[in-house]
Image (cartoon, rainbow, N blue to C red):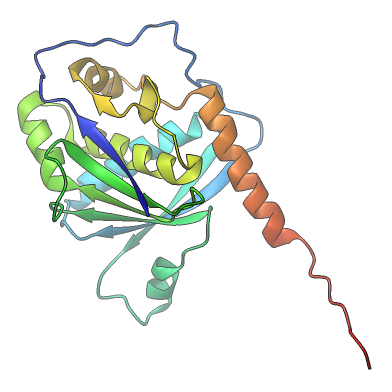
Length: 220
């Protein structure tokens, strides 16, 4: 099982601005695809903060022509219809994000982790809200904005697969203060190539499910 993490640099006094010439995706493609995310708020993130974070992540994916449908899940909804929908996992278009207060064991800079198998496929990601709050205290940036970008980063790992970290943009592995400033301004998104890869992944999954079933009868 491969694990992909997002780390935030502790040297917050250092400004590492990204070049304005980087070709990140800003134009929404004509056709919009959809990914559903079941969110388990196990860290008791305030409802308003969570909604704003989801809106931030939705905006980032919308720039790539991908619409996100959020299913906010309660640990008490086990046998209900909503509970069944929350537990549903279908790669690549129905994934799960668990927001935890803290990890059991990970380096202190990691804000999230996604879980991929040997084929680069994965449906689950964990986000660590305690570390988001700590980062907020050190920068005074919106915790909802930070959380939304971390969620988008980890979902990006699930849709992009292995070797999905990049030198800049939302899939940058280690973020510095300059990246956070740009994120707060809505300038940190997926690159055009990353957007294309995610859309191809979602399109191929949709085509497989919509393909007619062919039944063959062997013998009498």
